[in-house]
Each structure stands twice: as structure tokens, then as C-alpha cells.
Amino acid sequence: MLDYYDKILVGIAGSLLGGVLLSLATAIDSNTGVLLGALLATPFIYDAMFRNPPLPATDPKVAAAAIVWHGILFVLAVTAYMS
Image (tube, rainbow, N blue to C red; front, side, top):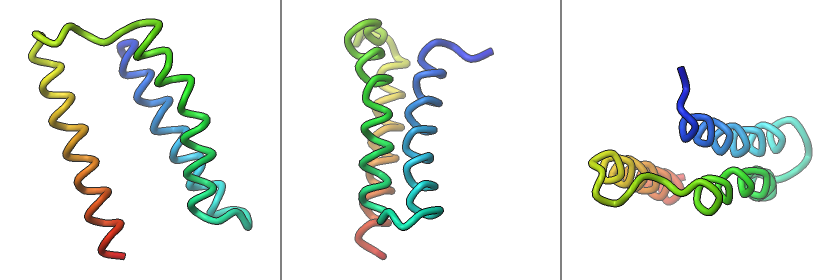
């Protein structure tokens, strides 16, 4: 069963993936597609950060989530510079 924040993450990832797929299926360039996906993901982020804030910073899950997120950002940055 998906937790609330799992659903938020699925919504964010789905929005970004939708933007990428839109750019692949139409004449929209990839930067615009990712931007549209990011704009669509914004309400999910707002809801998770301001309406229903995440776990307290003392929870070990917060540290694990931060490590995973920074790993994802590192991989994205490396692949962007390699292509």
C-alpha cells in the first residue's frame, strides 16, 4: 500500500515523465517538455512541503531520503554533461 508521500513522489515522477514523453511525441523540444512536467509537478511539491510537511529532521527516514535525492541529482548532472 502506498503511503501519502509515496503518492506524492509518484505524482512528481509521473509529471516529469509525462513532460518528457510529450516532448518525444510532439514537436516540443525536450527542455520545454521537462519544464511543462516540472510545472505540473509543482502542486505536488507544494502540497508535500507546505500543506503536509515531511517527517521531523530527527527521523532516520529523512536522512535516507536526502541521500537518495542527492544521488539522483548527481546521476542526472553527470548524464547531462556526458551527452
